[in-house]
Figure 1 (tube, rainbow, N blue to C red):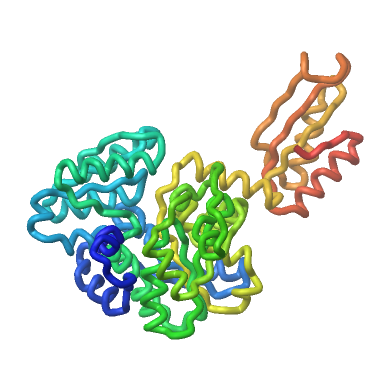
Figure 2 (tube, helix red, strand yellow):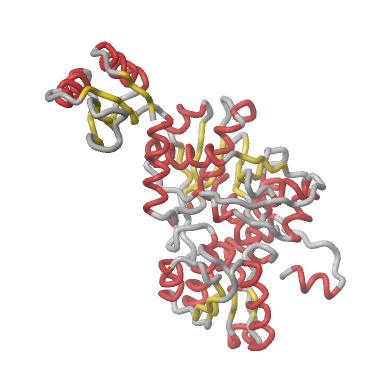
Length: 413
């Protein structure tokens, strides 16, 4: 039941129980994939904790939103089914509602901001939904979706401020604790708060005393700010756009405050490091929002060192270009790609000598820019920019030393 209904009926504060989550699990069985929870040895070695990954990026739409959407739609009355559903979303919730409405034979309308990438629009339409592009922001899309719901008699399926959705998201923790019952802590991303709320509510009954943490990215710490009684101040670009939320759910906020769940905040760089570690170490593709749980383990080692920690790769819908940029940036940070700038004499054989010195130490030149006419400081010199692939920082330092031994002035880029 959505918060609006509760407020209008004057009902007591909402709640989600283990019984609600178990009922949701029975309701969505067969419609949602039961994804594995696996230990990742490479990730565990890198962070100093025994990390278990819940791979909800394997869902048909690539994200955990399937769970809440499937449960909410399964709860609809015959009259609501006949009228149809409506949702607002720029991504994973849109596809989840569209898919499960299609499976149930229910007409779906999804309102998306005008800036929504064409691929997301096409995927949502691919599940048979009517897509309405309206507004510059999610807030404007939400307002229009509510208007359409009233005008056309549609049932609004909120991405997180709905008890049915929250209970559906909580089914994730049932599977996690069944597959890995000896976990010492659980970590979940926070956007609007539905996933964390459902999982925390179920976990506190299944495993009383088990620490459950939420995670937000530093540009969008809305839930952490509200729980601390601070004004909400968010904004800026983030690779974790799936949890870049200003207005958190009122139901999740109330329940998380009641349960005393702590929300950790991680820097943008840690999210990029987590995406790269998952891709290279665990061989798992994660979107930014799907990697923030691991980012928290990286950022707060004192909380998780030596413990068995369960977190979720809750989504894998990352743009290919964004993924490649993250991986390249991480290679630069790790010292496995060198960007070198050299001012060299304008004489024959200079490039050959530099290449030979790099090759002798096993470096691989992957990019060369040789500016001979206009970029050099004098007509007797030339400017050389190199990108070199190396095994590690030690090999990179050896290559720089070999170049300096040849009387080349080397600057890192």
